[in-house]
Amino acid sequence: NAGVTQTPKFQVLKTGQSMTLQCAQDMNHEYMSWYRQDPGMGLRLIHYSVGAGITDQGEVPNGYNVSRSTTEDFPLRLLSAAPSQTSVYFCASSRDRANYGYTFGSGTRLTVV
Amino acid sequence: RKEVEQDPGPFNVPEGATVAFNCTYSNSASQSFFWYRQDCRKEPKLLMSVYSSGNEDGRFTAQLNRASQYISLLIRDSKLSDSATYLCVVTSPTGGSYIPTFGRGTSLIVHP
Image 1 (cartoon, rainbow over the protein chains, first blue to last red):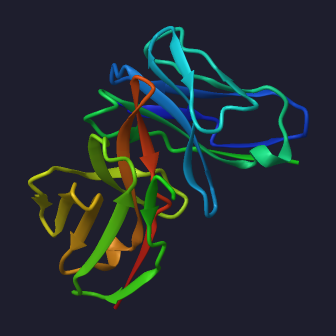
Image 2: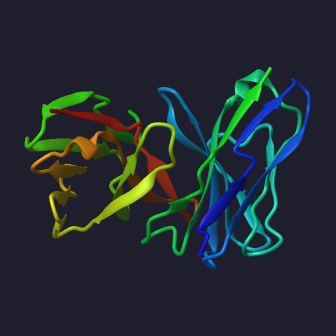
């Protein structure tokens, strides 16, 4: 099993550009989420999904969209990149968000110039 | 008050030492608790769940104190390879769902 796969690993964007961060898991997990991690801020939840077709906002959703058309995939879309979105982005999945831990992807390091 | 708080450290200890971290949480309805380990520039990895009765995994012991609303992680016989940031995670009911909240992490440095 590959676990949680994120692409790309690194990305540089210009302000105003849009892009999609890809996330796929092969563990048949229902729960998937996106986090951003900034120095001194810890991991902050952007969006999450409890199953295909269901998404909801987390702590810092502004500037990001998500969709969940299949159990496996949970892409994160940056609508119009801003320097404040420079961060490390992690996708995570879990069998059951209440009682099980999460498996993280290896992250995407995004720089917006 | 932050939902989940950790002492950022760093905790600087010699090999073989015993070290303990605490993590406090504010929501008394929190349901599940975890410790994660994160190495520099890597993703967090689940270290262990924390159960009400306490649980042990080799040199690591995790405990939960619901009355005082904190969890702890004890590492015995520290190894150089234990150097990392340790994140606590608390899952709480929010608007009909369960949302995990991460602490900002405690940095551990084990030196020879």
